[in-house]
Amino acid sequence: MGSGIRAEVSLPTAAPSPFEGVVDGSTPIYSVARSASTGDPESVVFEFIADADLPVPEGVDVVFDYGAKAAYRFETPCVEESPFAVLDRHGVPASETTIRDGRLLVTFHATDLPTLRAVLDEFRESCSDMQVLRLLQSSSTPEESDLVTVDRSELTERQREVLTVAYDAGYFDHPKGANAGEVAASLDIDRSTFSEHVAAAQRKLLSALLD
Image (tube, rainbow, N blue to C red; front, side, top):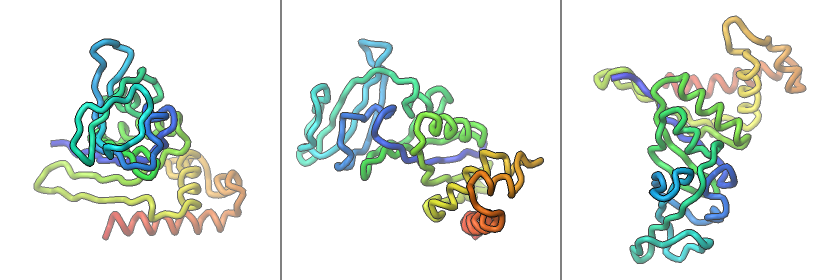
C-alpha cells in the first residue's frame, strides 16, 4: 500500500467557492456532499446539513427535516476555479467538507507530494486567502504506520509569510534558486532577521515532525 498525505485547507466561502450567497458563514455546516446534475452536465448539486432555521436564498431547498437540523440541497453551475473542480482535475475527491466561522474547510487525500503541491498551487492561484491547516502523512505499510501531524497555526503570520516567499523563490531547493540575502531583500528585511524567522519556523516544524 502506498503512502499518502491527508490535507486540511481553509478557504473563504466567497467565489470561486460554490457557497457564495448560499450561506452567510455564521452557522456551522457539515456533511457536505456533491454529485453531478442529472439535468445539466454543466452543473453540480450540493447537499449539506445545518440548523433547521438556517436562512437560505431562493434555489436552496430543504430535502429532509431532522427536527433541529435539516438537509439542504442546491444546484450551481460548474466553475473551473472552484476548489472542488480543482480536486476533480487532479483525481482527488474531497473526503470531508464543512463550513465553520465563515470559512470553507476541505479535507482531501493526495497520493503523493507532487499531487499535493499541484492542488495547493491551484488553490493559491484562485484564492490568495487559502490556508493549509493540517498535513498528515502515512508510511508505506500499515505495520510501519508513523503518522505525523503538522499544524501550521503553530507558526506566526510573519513566519508563514517568510517561509512562503522563501519557498516560492527556491531558497529551499538544491541548488538554491535564491540566497538568503535575495529573499530578505524581497521581504524588505535584513538577512539576519530573515535567518531568525526561518530558524524559528524550522524549529517549530521539526519539533512536530521529530517529537
